[in-house]
Amino acid sequence: MLGTVATIAREKGLPALWKGLALRLHRQSLTIAITIANPTILIKVQLQAERKLPLGVPRRYSAAQDAYSTTIRQEGILALWTGLAPKNCQD
Image 1 (cartoon, rainbow, N blue to C red):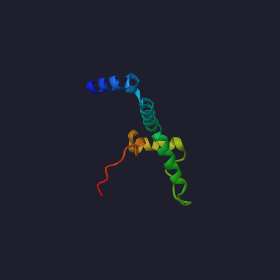
Image 2 (tube, rainbow, N blue to C red):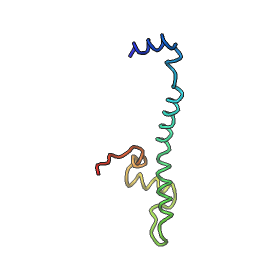
Image 3 (tube, one colour):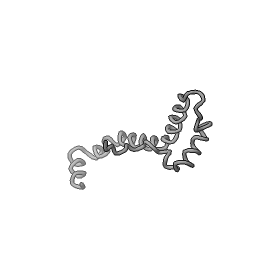
């Protein structure tokens, strides 16, 4: 690995070692943001799904805060990150 670094630095100059760094940092920032936002997205989707239920069907949640607390109480806090990683499909 050090040999590769030395070759790049010698042939293309030291700045070449940082080429593409901004894009990689941007991609990592997006990954972190998605991880932070996932609980909010999950609750939003759950509430949207409830709005489509027919009249007379009992709702699971009364509001967003209730959806958070109910989800955590019934499924655990990690349930807020459901869907963050792909599931292993073995069908």
